[in-house]
Structure formats: structure tokens, C-alpha cells
Amino acid sequence: MSELPSAPAPKTASALSMVGMPRLVKLAAASQVWGSAVGTWAVVRELTSSDGGTVWGVLLALALVYYTLAGVSALFVLRGRRRAMPYLALAQLPQLIVLQTAHFKYQLLSGLYVIAKIGAFTGAEFGIMSSFAFRWGTTAGDWELGVNVVAAAVLWYLLSPAAQRAAEASRFPLRALDQLGGGGSDEGAG
Picture 1 (cartoon, one colour):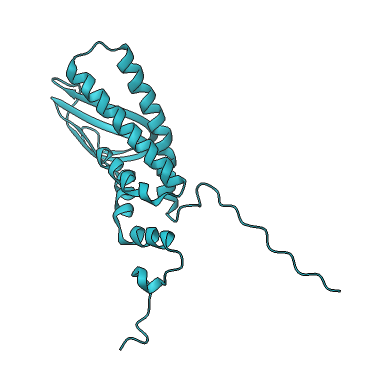
Picture 2 (cartoon, rainbow, N blue to C red; picture 1 turned 180 degrees about the horizontal axis):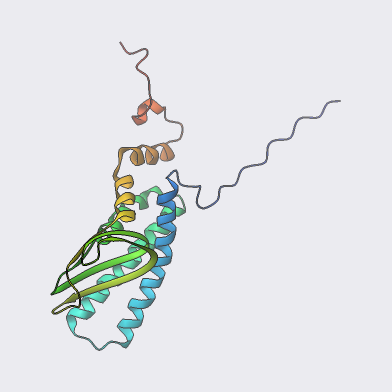
């Protein structure tokens, strides 16, 4: 009597391979979770110890909302929830530009970053951290303008047609490839 072959063992996916996105996006999302946790901790600590004015309190509350949105959306993307992708894209916008003049400074970073800078310091700055700086009045240093290359790359991918097709393919796995708008042939078209 012959025995039936056993079924193959189910494959388990790691958290980084669940979502059909490039590794850079997954790495940026994972680092954004960490950056959001550190940023939230710093903002809450400042809110509880500061007796600053209304403007400072509003800025800190906005930073807290940002870090919460960025962290939750990154967690949901890593868990394979495609509906969180627009929120992760939205979380990249405040991180795109770093600006400092003689009277103003703005910087908001969460997680992995590579900043290409020109001005007083021309070059690249990179790391993994959380930072929020918003100053007006007299600031130290000359002018600098920087672009966060990681945030720009993640935003570009999330808004690209390839990411939209991947999101559709994961929502409707049995839909034909030509209905998703990519890779279909024109054979049989009249």
C-alpha cells in the first residue's frame, strides 16, 4: 500500500518580507518606528517639564501628533496593512527639508536619514535618530539647506505606480496581471 505524500510545510513570512516593498522602504519603516518612539519620549518629557508659552506647547503637541502618526503608520505597513501606505507617505513630508538661516531653523527627523546639505556645511549627514528643532530669532550658524534623501526615496516609491499596483495585487491576489495595469500582453485584443 502506498502512502500519500505529505503536504509541504507552510511558509512563514518574517515581518520584513510580508509587505511587497523594497528593503529600503521596509528598513525606513522599521527605523521610523524606533524614531517615533524616541521622538514621542522626548516630546512628552519636554511637555511635562516645560512651562513654556502657548506657542511652544502647540508646537510640541503637533510634534507629538506627528510622531504618533509616523510610528503607527510604519507599524501597520510592516504588518502588511496596505491602507497605512498613504499615511506613511504623509509622514515623510515633514522630514524632506532641513532649513537653517540666521533667524530660523527647522528640522524634523524620525528614524533613518541621509541629508544632502549645502551652505555652511556642504556634504552629507546620516544616522538613525529622532530630532525636532524649530527656532526663530537669532540662531547660531550660517544658512544651510538640506534634503532628506531617505524620506524622498520612500515618498517617491509610495507614490509611484509600481507601489499602487503592488497594493492592488495584494488586495486582489486572484486578479489577472493585465487587469492590474502591468505586464499584460496585447494578445487576443481585437
